[in-house]
Length: 131
Length: 57
Image 1 (spheres, chains in turn orange, purple):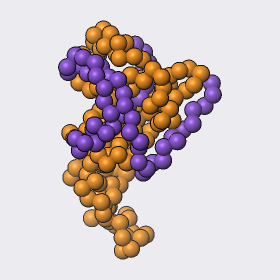
Image 2 (tube, chains in turn green, cyan; image 1 turned 60 degrees about the vertical axis):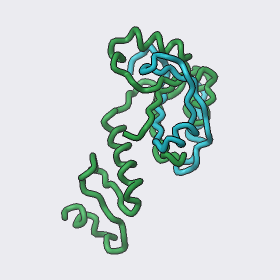
Image 3 (cartoon, one colour; image 1 turned 180 degrees about the vertical axis):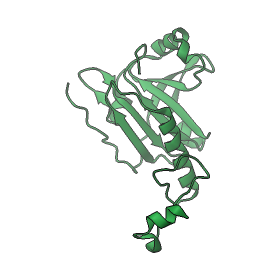
């Protein structure tokens, strides 16, 4: 889809290999499994917890020009919704092609209604979404 | 637990190049990946941090 997905934890690449081989729910995994044992990349993104030596559950979207466009961080015990990640990625992909538009809260996929912000829309978002 | 410094990187800002050792399940081999490499392919990067392997989401 034009993106490289990399999962990252402070485990080494050897643990990733062992986990992939062992855990059935990872059977069809095709993404790169990143190893950050020194915590260097986790610290760069502000998700490294020093005392635990572990990374928080952070998701970051970077465009092909290297700009950080989205970040979401949760504490250890709350999982992230993958549908939401897909929605964010698709929205960002779409908006990269249509910079004058905006994806409203209900936007889920290409083809859904978008807004074209401008002076005529001020105070009239309800009407714009209903069209 | 000392709280991490949330997002020293600014949203909308340039991410400095970084490199990671990886396990590639498709090649079934180890390797490295860098942000520069992904950018040169014209692709987006999605980084998904999590605490530890062999644990539960």
